[in-house]
Each structure stands twice: as C-alpha cells, then as structure tokens.
Amino acid sequence: MSKVLELKNLSYVYGTGTPFEKTAVNNVSLSIEKGEFIGIMGHTGSGKSTLVQMLNGLMKPTSGQVLLDGEDIWANPKDIRKIRFKVGMVFQYPEYQLFEETVAKDIAFGPTNMGKSGAELEKAVNDAARFTGLKDELLEKSPFDLSGGEKRRAAIAGVIAMNPEVLVLDEPTAGLDPMGRDVLLSQIVQYHKERKNTVILVSHSMEDIARVADKIIVMNKSNLVMFDKTKEVFSKGRELEEIGLRVPQITKIMLDLREKGFNVPEGILTVDEAMDCISSLLDKEGKIW
Ligand SMILES: Nc1ncnc2c1ncn2[C@@H]1O[C@H](COP(=O)(O)OP(=O)(O)OP(=O)(O)O)[C@@H](O)[C@H]1O
Image (cartoon, rainbow, N blue to C red; front, side, top):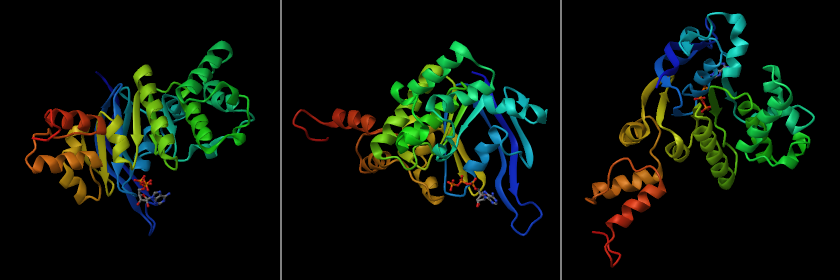
C-alpha cells in the first residue's frame, strides 16, 4: 500500500490575534494509505470538521502541511481547485447545497467543471446515482421535489460523480431515520468496495464507525489522541470513556461477559460477530458454558 494523505504537524487556529483565538486542530501528524476506510470520532467541538476541511484545501492550515500523493496541496495555491476534485467533501446536511433545475444536472455539476461531457459525463452521473440508490425516475425531477433522504443522496452523488481519490463524509447519516442510516451506510460501504478509493467518515455513531472503518482517528480537545485499527481503538473502552466517548453497545456487552469469565474474544464490534460468538458458546441444550 502507498500513502494517499499525509498530515504533518497540522494546526488550525480560528481568529488568530483576536480575543476569540481558538486552536481547533493542534499539531496533528498521521498518514492514510490508499484505499483505507477511516473513521473520525471525537466529542463535539474536538476539531473533526476543521481537520477534514483542511484535507481538500477549503481551509488553509495555520501551520503544518497536507500532502496528497506526496505533494503539499498548498505548494501552488492557484491549483487548489484541482485538489477539491481529488478530495471530495460531503458536508453535514449537504442537501442544502442543491441548486440546479434537475437532480441529474446537480449531480453533473462537479464532473462538468472537471471537463467531462457526453457519454463520459452521463456514465459518471448514472454510476453515482446507482451508488447512492437514487432511482432513474428521480433524475429529471427538481431536487426541491425530493424527500429529505433523497436530497441527501443526490448531494452525495454529486461528489461521488467526480470520482474523487479520497471521499470525505462529515456526518452523512445525521438526521436520517434508522432504516435510512443503515441503507446509506451500506451504500457507502459498497462504493468503497467497488471503487477501492479512500473513504474518510466523520461520525458521532460508534456503531456506524465500528461497522465500516478499518482504522479510527480519535480527536479530543483539538488533539489527535488515537489513530489505530478499529478493534484496537475499541479495546480501549476505559480511555475512550475518559474523553467522553464510548465503545459500541455490543462491544460493551461482550466485554462485560468476558469480565464475568465467559470465553469471548476482545474487540467484538458488530451484532453479527456477537451472535456467532454466543452461539459457539451455547451447548445443545441452549445453555451457555
Ligand atoms: N468559524 C469558527 N470561528 C471560531 N471558532 C470556531 C469556528 N468553527 C469552529 N470553531 C471552534 O473550533 C473548535 C473545533 O470545531 P469543529 O467544528 O472543528 O469541531 P467538531 O469536532 O467538528 O464538532 P462537531 O462534532 O460539533 O461538528 C470548536 O471549539 C469550535 O467552537
């Protein structure tokens, strides 16, 4: 594997030199390999959104560097627009950014700006619509006639249509119902599996992150406090609690069983894994031993 993103001593300070000066990201260094699925978690205000907005040049670091494929994204500030095609950003509540006459035109906006047209553009739009589960008949509708969940999909499709090397999603499932969350998350996983591009997902849901991420970045009070494989991070339940986070509920239940002496492994992350583990502990009469 090779590095796609490298953050070197990255910091961001809001309102430098004013009474409201606030360091939102403090000296973060880490590397992300091509094709990894990274989760970012942290308490509200810990610096997650500020961090991800520096990844595609929307915010310029106060100090430090973001290297994309080995090159500083700010080496030539005139080229920063190109970086935004390579690192696609889906903001919180992206549906508020829809503006074209039809859903298809909205999805086509990014790839058109990249110079795509004709059959290539059409394919980019249709593929992106498929990844996000938007039915064909919705493509010619006005985005404003869609349901909330459909608008969200259309906005995400608009970023996916640019086929970014890195897709960053800031709380993509916020405000959706449980079924809508599950489906959207599965579609993001499917996108990652098929395109094999790097995906970075910011989420407050430990369950969502446990389900999808290979590795997790944990932010606390502007600092990077953990960056490790998902199982490793969630095996540090006590440390997470200390910074106001928790492990997924199913992981907690399995850890409790382990502490009570049952032979269950550490780092169970999903209900499916837990079910497999519990059924292997049941004898023929259905008793746990
Ligand atoms: N435009 C701004 N001006 C001044 N301070 C800001 C601004 N935006 C964010 N901050 C501050 O920077 C810190 C980090 O904010 P950021 O939005 O990056 O956190 P977050 O982890 O994404 O939070 P949330 O989970 O609530 O989205 C917070 O203390 C916040 O109050």
